[in-house]
Amino acid sequence: MTHEDERDLTALLERLRQEHRDLDAAIEALTSVAGSDVLQVQRLKKRKLQLKDRISHLEDELFPDIIA
Image (cartoon, rainbow, N blue to C red; front, side):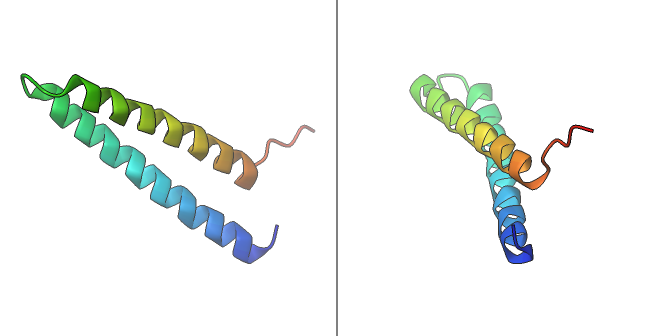
């Protein structure tokens, strides 16, 4: 992996982490309001899980486990 590839993946990783945090805040806000749209909350949670998986995958690419 080139330095440029690593830099691009790091930038993507940070954007995904920010989106994950934003979704967390949106879910929190929606669930604190009585009568919130349950379907919308479920969709946001699903997207958040997808982001978590993608973040984990990118972290594995950038920081592979090295078995000694």
